[in-house]
Image (tube, rainbow, N blue to C red; front, side):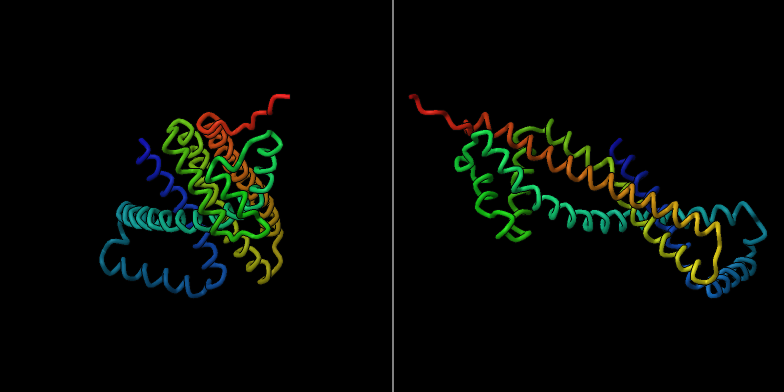
Length: 239
């Protein structure tokens, strides 16, 4: 079931990005694209395929599905890498607040190696690689100790896989529409540009919010596991 859903996500995401790329290319090279389409039409006519509408539709549908799936795989990879880069920077900003909340709750950070490492490499003096390293250890510990918590966290990533690709497609479409507007003023295109810009901004805001929720889920899950294992809460000395 998961494999089927993954294939569908690749196809849908690839189709969205492929259409955006087609609009982008056509907006910059309209004459060249028209010439290419004419040559393809002549080629299919010479093969005797162009006369059969069903054959043409089947051929182009097969090609489009294959291209969409390939584009979906690559776009998911690039989108994941781009938003992973963003996530690490979101994580770096949240480390200080996370550790402060633990200290306010009288948690002894020195007892846990990962929390101690995060505290030693505070955001002011740490590199991104340090935060990524200790965050990875935190994620791995949750995976090993509590598959249920891990599945809950991982499901949050799966929910916006298409949203990341959609965001890339929206950016490409906005550039294409701006290019068309520079060719000449068009009221429908202006409306479309404003609409897509609003969608892209809202999509970016939702993705950013999900990043923060995903980050908090890892931190809270790890904290719960550590409280029982190490007894991290400092005990008050008897008066």
